[in-house]
Length: 561
Ligand code: PEP
Ligand code: MG
Image (tube, rainbow, N blue to C red):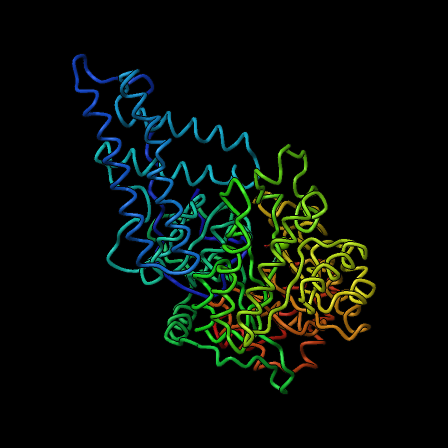
């Protein structure tokens, strides 16, 4: 079926762009089962080909990583390491030598075995399956002389349409060539969505019908509204082109049109990202995710190693504030040394601060390291917060533990409805709250944040989520404590206005979103933020909330957001 209708999905990376549709090429075909080397063939030589292909794919990905930065570079380096994974290569070589399989078939079967192991581990590990399959396809393409799977090469910019995109592929997209992405599958907090945002490429996911738009059709993609319009009017195209020339920067001072200050902060995933975030003008770090130091480990890193790593982030923000979040392991980030037995519902299991009950030593070491790093960087204001707090008891214990380590500014993340409803009592103990809208949405709507099928529910515009944000702000106001937001919602300029209107005092986001959020806030006075917040929280649905707010913010249109 050929579609000329507007295709709607979920906007996950704001911005508008127009270009002809190019479909992602078909996946690399599976080499036939049982295809073997001819009798008498050089099996050692064939096995060696696997190693050579792995090294070449690794080099190619490393080179792409060298040319990228931050989150994108980290992801590419991780995929490159996977390409050179000695166990995958050794398994494939073993299959060549013992079963006489042709190298491409051996790679295919070895990758299948790795995927089966990852799937059995579940959670975060199971998510790596897609990365392994990406590596497998790259290896098979190289071994069979096919064009590497991935982004088509064209001489002029285009809109990439696909069923779904692997994170490694999204990471390689050049915004000058691929002006927008539309996928039929995917969810708003999928890696692909997060990477598209980090690269500044407008993106719409979960857009059923996208694949029906024929190659070459001119498509206008609105990554905020979540629409893709085939054959747009000349006027609409001219507007998008006019806006495309404008680049915005953030001057390091977040405030509304009438001067109400809103701290605009950065989310940082590891020390490498910290300098880029500081250079982007961020007023501080609102969420420093410390998991990077623990993932892929068999043991927790020792205090010295943690101190050095945290110190690198604090150093980049001399004179500014850094909110360090203690380890958020569990759920989609299980750690073998903390989670021995698999859980039936890991998102509802022992994750975040809950881990500290069974393993107080892990929290103690981490607080020791944070305190030492803070002492070594007295010019940086170091705050600490715990993830997944649900009760007053947990808050009291955490705040007391921080105090014992000489960390007086201890706060909590509000990610569980319980914490939002109890914000007042919790903030009688904690010095601040930071709302993690990714998890707060997941737990409020009972919708897995990684599952594309429930993407419409996993939307921070859901009025129930906004009402819990409001309840948290009321609890904060009652205790005169600041309440920030550090989930993905803070990076949506229209939603940022709503959050400020609900009483949020700081917004922490991917650094790339800072200029847009700052520009929209600077054009909106606090009274308007409050009116729009009321409309959104009282709306009957997420779609109505979004539409009502967007209708009240003509600046979005002016800025092309
Ligand atoms: C959140 O849940 O919104 C959050 C910021 O934490 P994470 O995405 O790391 O779970
Ligand atoms: Mg969270």
